[in-house]
Amino acid sequence: MKPGIRLYLKRFFIRLRAWEFWPFWAVQFPLFIYWLWLSIKARSLLFFSASNPSIVMGGMFGESKYSVLNQLPEELIPRSLLITDALSTAHVMELLQINGFSFPLIFKPDIGERGFRVKRIDSSDDITRYLEESQADFIVQDLVDWPVECGVFYTRFPEEEAGRVTSVVVKDMLSVTGNGKHTLGELIWNNSRAALQWERLQQAFSLNWDEVIPSGEIRVLNSIGNHCLGTTFLDGKHLISEALSHRFDLISKQMAEFYFGRFDLRCPTFDDLLKGPIKILEVNGCGAEPAHIYHPGTPLLSAWKELFRHWSNLYTISYQNHLRGYRYTSFSDGLKIFRNFRRQMGA
Image 1 (tube, one colour):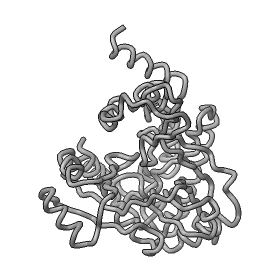
Image 2 (cartoon, helix red, strand yellow; image 1 turned 30 degrees about the horizontal axis):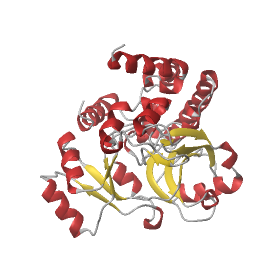
Image 3 (cartoon, helix red, strand yellow; image 1 turned 60 degrees about the horizontal axis):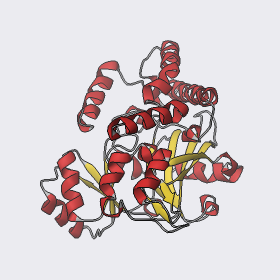
C-alpha cells in the first residue's frame, strides 16, 4: 500500500472512532438549529453580541484579543506587544529590541480563533516564516512555561451579583514516550493524536526523525495548548469549587462588563488556581467553548447537552443585558465585522 493511502486510511479511522476530531461544523450542527430558535426569541440573529457589551460581537468573532486581554491588570497577563503593519523581519526585530523582548516568544493573530497561527518563535528565521504566512496584525507575548495550562470558563448573569466557574479544561501537551526500540517517527505513527499531525511533525523534527528514543524518555512534540495541534483536553470539573468561582469572579469584574467566556491560562501548580500566581494568556468571549467536552471518550450526546446548556446561558445573559439598555449588533454592522474577520484570517 502506498504511504499516502496508508496515512489517509489511518487518519480516517482515527477520526471515525473519536468525534472530538470531527470537523467543527459536524459537531456544531445541532447548535445551529438551536441558535436559530434563540434568534427568533430575541428577534436578532446576533443577540449574542450583547453578552459582553464591551467586546466586539461579545467575543464571538472579530474582536481584538490584545484589547480584551489588556483590560486585566499587568500582574495577571504576560508582557505583550501588538505589532501592526510589520514591514520586515528586521522591522519586527527592532520593535522587539526596543521593547525588551527576547526569544523564545509566542506570536498570535490579534484577530483569530481556535489556535489559528499561534506559533512559538525561537529565532529571526521563525519571524521570517511567520511574516510569509500573513501580514495581519499580531501579538507578541513572553513565553510562559509554567507546567499547568487550563481553560477556566466563567458565567455571570447580569441580574446576579456573583458569577461562577462552569467548566475547567486541563491541557495535556502532545508528547510521546520512548521505549528504547522505536524511532521518533515510529512513535509518532503509533500515537493517534500525533499521526493526525504527521506532516507538521515530520517537518519540525526532521533532524531527529530516525533517532531511537530511550525507554521512559518523554518528548514533547508541541508546547502550545491547542486542540488542533494535538493537545489532549481533559475534564477538570474536580477543580471547580466556590473558592475557584470567587477568584474568577474577582478577576472578571476587573474587566468592563464581562459576563461569559473562557480564561486560558498557565500557573505553576493546580493549587495556584485558587491563590497563587497565574498568567492569563488569552480571554475568549462568547465564541469560546466549554472545552472540557473534548475529554477523550466523552459521549457525543453528553457534549451536545453541555453545549445546549452553554447556549441557553448565553441567551439569558444577552437578553438581560439587552433589557439593561445594551443593543444587539445590527445585521449590517455584524456583516462588516465578519468580513474584516475573514480578511484577517486570510480567507
